[in-house]
Image (tube, rainbow, N blue to C red):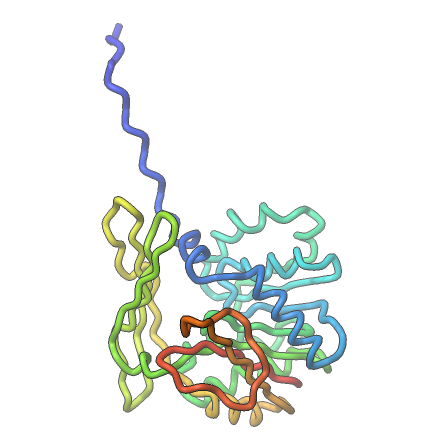
Length: 272
């Protein structure tokens, strides 16, 4: 018989869940789906019912779209199996059986001309910046236009500002961890830029390059011109307001002109 050890085993350290930390520091899907619904209503005068989330990743946005209204249906599309599998394990189980019936997740290409038609297409978290030349971007926008319903609306976020032209790292403290947004490089000859997200859980080492991005920085006029060429009738700019301290307040309003600042986030809302 083995003697009973008097030494208490140390509790196992929790597994690092990169998608959970990403969600806590980058995403605000509950707010985003309300914004998507409201800008559609502002453009069309009625509420949308169907939405497709391009580059959906773990499809947290699509899940919150389904939760927002029993009339809502959703489609999520992504090529990468890893975040989709995470969504299947962690996002989908949080929906009721009836809600799951209204959500379709596809491992596929956002350039597929046979994607389901919807009222609203969302390309969030700057994911479409992966298209680095005008021809690729035009092809994507044309496919969005083709796969929207007659009164469809396309919503995409984008960012910019003088900080995007220099290598720099910003950090934000959250409860239990620190989030780092690292611009590693920028090439003014091509507008190509490399970014990374790092995390440091309190009491642990900093985890470098948890997520990495190789993008082209696109300007508002460039995108509006390509959207028009793709067939969109009108594109509206939604700009973030500022707090008294000078930071973004998370509230976006339709404007005709932006504001020169070190870092900004905006939305383009395009009507078919």
